[in-house]
Image 1 (cartoon, helix red, strand yellow):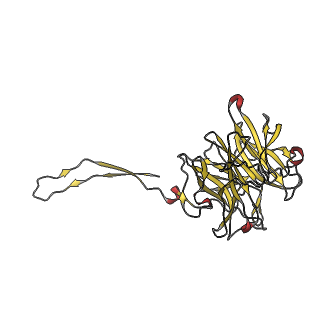
Image 2 (cartoon, rainbow, N blue to C red):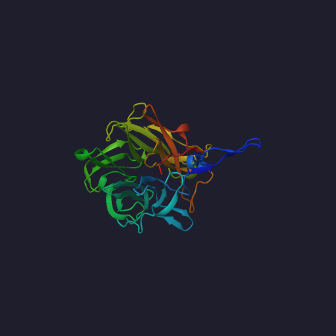
Length: 359
């Protein structure tokens, strides 16, 4: 908002019956112009045409950078991990693709579901390489000095053969603790169980024994620490069937990062068929389906938490070439009795209060 300054000199003129005029001292008036709608409100989607499986970091330059799955945005325009940026999470612009060349350690497959973290003064991107029905998908690591790349590939971290986990995609990296107690973990998996492993100091080499935190209902792991607890966000259902998608996000919590993770009623999500507690879903009647594969929760400068994810618009569900079109979406999370909730439990369609960040 801008400030306006107005100086008014007021002379009080009297009729001729008065011998002289009386002048008031100079007066200074200052006010703030009211904020515009663009400053305080936003409406979904926040970026189109597509930013599937998003990951977000706030860089030292003050910008938010978001990264998405490889896709064709339009005929003849193919993006290998597109990067977009924003100052306020509501107005985004395309920056670049993360890779100048496709990772070479696996010759077939798309580069899916990047997970980007600022660590060791660099930007670490864990990413999946897979085809549909791939018998040996894997996860690689790429590193950049800058949030907008280019990212230099470091090769394979693990694959299904080396890890013993079928469908080894959808990586999520997290560090917990501090000092000697600081540990680095990688979580991964897609509809064949969700697993975790500790990583060595190089943040690339799995160490110790892998552990399982969720059953076969989930993919797209995200773990969020809140008030001393760990909240697991997992996506359930079909991500990529256009307007028929049944994708949605469920939540469970644990006292320890390794679990056990329980839904809101106290049941373990390791149980066969257990989906956890639904956070957000969609429907054809609502006009948006398939909300899921969320990015990191972002807290604004007023302490409000925002949930960023992709979804599918029923009236415009496909990209050029027939792939599912998944625009970027955002809704506020409110914690009710220490449980994350989204108003209405569906993607918002109307104007919403925007995140606030000190410029």
